[in-house]
Image (cartoon, rainbow, N blue to C red):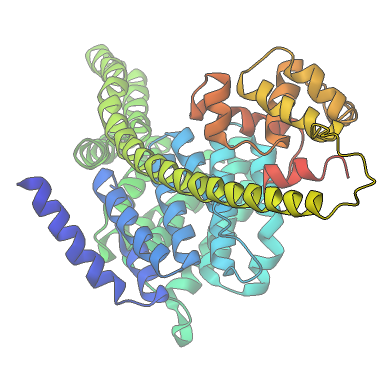
Length: 479
């Protein structure tokens, strides 16, 4: 009964959404709550993506994927986040007509992912690639976001003064966005609450630099901002940085008050370990400074419990994507079968016409010609190619030697770029032969996810640009 009702409501919502323009559907996407997003929000975004696909709203589809990627990133599920980020390019959603907003969020999302992986140089490079264009667009929201991301990375690599410089820029442009002179920008709750967070972050930066007088100005402002908009995310961030400020000036009662407030928000609204760990560590540090052993023990144990409690949330999120992947695989299999049927029928028709042609050709041939039937032989290259394909499908150890005979420069060109292992060169050969991820997984007896991971690692080793399809790159290797 519940399943039937779910399907019914999905059909109703699909009909409702299908009446909207692409811009309206984008706005619906942006209005979906982000701070506490989970499986429910992902399902809603998925349904919007399907509607956008049916209407060929590519920008909307891309933004949907990136929003899901950001949700997984917030929940520290990097593989899922990369999966959805890569879908934007894999489905060819980026072209010369793509709106800058999509390109901006794609680079920003990748920067966040690389930052979490500890690849901060790559994270900065993602921002550098779009910074000039972002400034040219003169969109205060984009300018504040990119400066905010720069600040976070520089803070992590301990370039505090540089981080402060970018936090100041983010703060200025977030205020310009909120003022919205001439109604230039779309103001929604998610973007608005994000823009208010810059005061707390700037205050926190001054705390780290031991500039408590400056920190007080922005922490006070952040506490005032918290009253202007009722949003969980801004309450959490403001309370966390307020606690850090009061701890720096040794006002431990207020420190404790804001950390308990922060703990309550994290416990009731956030399931991601990142939010709860941040509070638990601050509370543990506070009580260590105060010498309260019982409290130290309590929060040490809480830190251990957080990770186990977080697994359930991650599992639910993973199940959601697994179902989506299963559906995509079924559709792909169906399309493959249909294509195979069409190709088979085409081959049969072609063979029929070839035999018909040969029949009439022999019939009208000069009587003086030798009529001894000579068996048809494939050209050497075509015969070798077919043999290679068969060896690849069988995962035969002779595949790579025979492939090197067919493409003698292939291994040599790859080794010029990077000292790859033989197993990696073999994997590259599969890609060069244009086998799909699913086919490679089937022929090499591995999972689709393993193949995707290998592709991702090869991209890094061979320095394949993020904006280039890996199959296109290999097709140009020997040209």
